[in-house]
Amino acid sequence: MNLTNIPNLILQVIKKHTSNFFINNTKKHHFNADHYKNREVALLTQHGKESVLSPILKEKIGCIVTRVKGYDTDLLGTFTRDIPRAGTQIEAARKKARIGMDLSGLKLGLASEGSFGPDPFTGMLPWNVEVLIWIDNEYGIEISAVAQGKTNLVNLLTTSWEETEAFAKTAGFPQHHLIVRPEGENDPRIRKGIAEWTDLQAAFTWALEQSQNKQAFIETDMRAHANPTRMENIRVAAEELAKKLSCLCPACGTPGYSIIERLAGLPCERCGQPTHEIRAEVHGCCKCTHRVTIERSDRQYADPGHCDSCNP
Ligand SMILES: [Zn+2]
Ligand SMILES: [Zn+2]
Image (tube, rainbow, N blue to C red):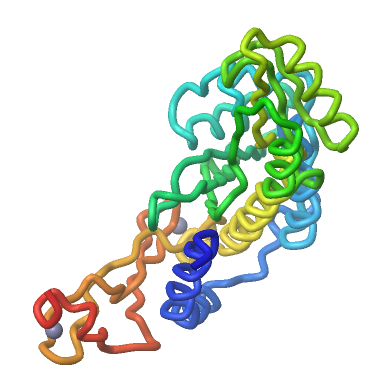
């Protein structure tokens, strides 16, 4: 069995059981709002994220993403362990958005922050979670969107060019860039953003020459512009953000009206006891207290196989 397919299989199962339900309910609250049309939003990035964020947000909500320069976002944390990130992922995104707004003087701010860890299903595969945050100082709101998926985060400590070559191919090189250091994972001598076979070979030779233990440490470059798999997750998060931003609260008109909670408890088809399956979604406003609970429309009962009483 090919292990890399496990998250895909699980996602397919989740989608199969949930897609109609979520799509139906999202449509009910989708308004074509143009409150962000031609508005400028500050994006602080030095890793090319504007290339995916800008066209999606332009098309879906009509805003203009303005890239803000003049601040080294690597100071807030890197994936190469030299600068650890302070705080949670959402706090880091918020901080970036605020810095972009301060530097540009704009009232709208946008930022993205990624993280990597084991997949939530098997805990065995590398997993990427991308968070996007939208801050609107006029409405006094903050809206976030998340996308996640498998990723190519891997590393190798080696003395062999053949091993390096094979590793690079499995890591999706050269579309996905690589990083090379001598000695090991924490050596400060580093070459990032390697995107050509000749450069990889040169960096490998350089690392062996520099290295006391005659080993080279090679890892995937997880910065957005160096990693198309990660960029795709950012694109999916941008779609989700645009969808949220185009929904207005039916009570107060604030953008960002969306699902804020999913309630479990769909009754078992055999015994009628509540199960862990989703029974309803709560849609809510990020500004006022307006809440609407929408019962699931596609299914009334859960499969007894998912019932703690019938299938303990
Ligand atoms: Zn049951
Ligand atoms: Zn509201």
